[in-house]
Length: 87
Ligand SMILES: [Zn+2]
Image 1 (cartoon, rainbow, N blue to C red):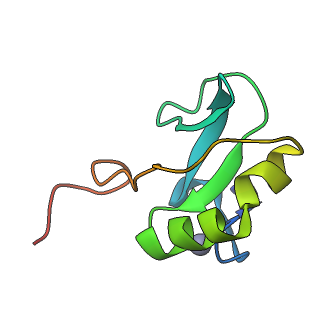
Image 2 (tube, rainbow, N blue to C red; image 1 turned 180 degrees about the vertical axis):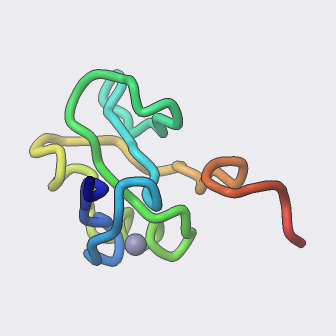
């Protein structure tokens, strides 16, 4: 069975859902949803600060959610989507 494909709202490339972080809007703010169980429309983003930066500069959260979304101050979640720390 093919993995669901989503488009990263930062770099606009498509990727299997498993490679992307899901964000939903809670109280008007973009919020990471590591469990992927929160209700609502999801915005998908690579676990990559560059993609997050691009998404913030383009207002991609608001566009993908089709409403005003507060996303400033959003940080890339370093503990998500990575096995351990490689540094
Ligand atoms: Zn991306």
